[in-house]
Image 1: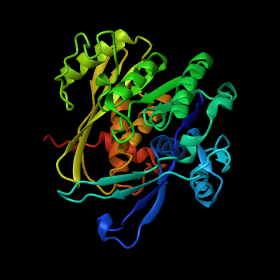
Image 2: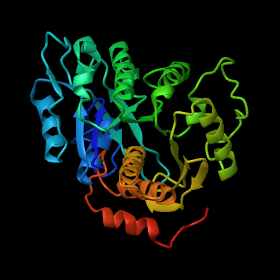
Image 3: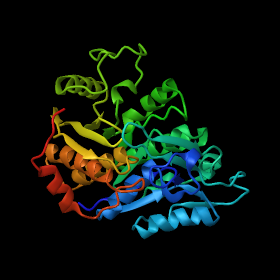
Image 4: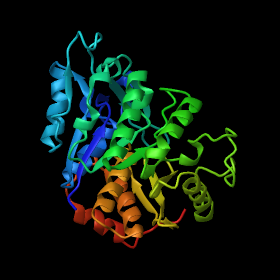
Length: 350
């Protein structure tokens, strides 16, 4: 089956001081573009998947430059709306500043995305049935609905439309504390879960609300963010018991040894079993987008019929490679290199 992928989200201008400099010390910034959903479309397009991106950007040089970058990487941008000042009064492209960490100094991000074009646009007139026509896979995240009420309404409508049309739906909880509270994120994600087939997230078991609020039945609140296989299996079993529509759950676990060296592994629940990936340890050139690279790698592997253990290993290997690439997205078309990495015998146990 040939898949056609579409995702919905915000693309931003990224400004980064060169050579690991701190923002307050820098006299220049490197410009690029990124955003969680855009990163996944970019990665999949580079791997040969037919990928489209729906967003709103201002009809000016910055907005057009972002679209040009996407198109240069084979992402279809026909759905992108170039807004006018009348449609989005502030008429701006969101941006963020990245201060890249080094050694014991962690990275730092400053967002400047309030009143961006996508947050001010009125999506009530968007025909989602028409937008999703012909696609087989829709990916969404918990970032876009946090931007504004109109964006939140769009995501819920898109989930329902995709489910009605029979698309595979993937969703990444992607909690951002600068955008909304934990309780707001949890409540929104709870509304999304009945429509989700493939669930991603660092800590998905915290992102649902049941009749007893924080009571999650067999899942304990003290399960760590770096669980072992047994603990993660407990989480997964509780999730699919409550949401039997979910076909698989994939999450990666990060071990930060320093700002320059991390390890990653991941867990996958699929067809009644939880799988544990190999451990990958690597030196970091650019950490941003590592989670998106994991998600895109997993989506690619699932689209191409990999075995469950190969799905999760390919996803972690994709994320590891992304950490060696500057920019937000995993811009590589070398599937064989990712497969070679996932099969290398070099695990380092910490």
